[in-house]
Length: 163
Image 1: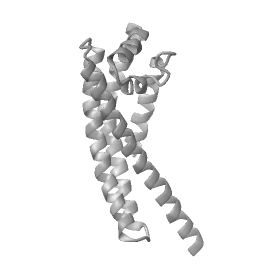
Image 2 (image 1 turned 60 degrees about the horizontal axis):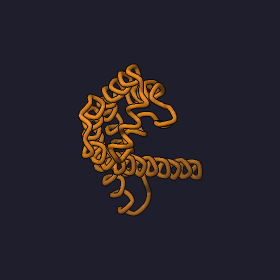
Image 3 (image 1 turned 90 degrees about the vertical axis):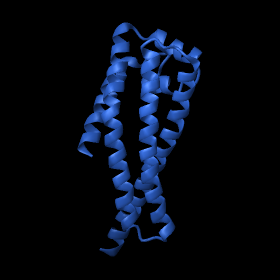
Image 4 (image 1 turned 45 degrees about the vertical axis):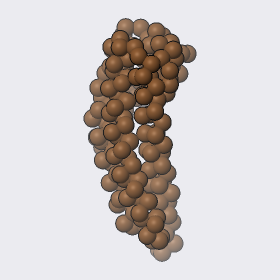
């Protein structure tokens, strides 16, 4: 978890120089471009120094995706074992743990596609595929975070009520 937080901070720092009116979310804007035209607009808005920041950001994202996948997956499984609810709620935690691993695989593919775009291999397919990797990745990670947040709240309130 500590490694996840450190790498998340590094992602945040390397993303800041990428934010501008064409890419208000920095690298996330490129991930969600969805078309070569929009990807080109974002890439054109980045100076050469920003492109180096983008490549560094993607380089950091490879160990980060391993770290967040491990952290979230283990968290979902550990929480599933502690929740006092029916087995289907625990099963959801296990499914979400596998889903986060799938999200990390999608993230890795997305990173390769974005690197190709950044290195000048400007194909419509790369922008479209990156988008379709990013959307389910974010959905799966968000679902796991919601599970952890709600489940953690349930565990805390049970503990407080029992005390």
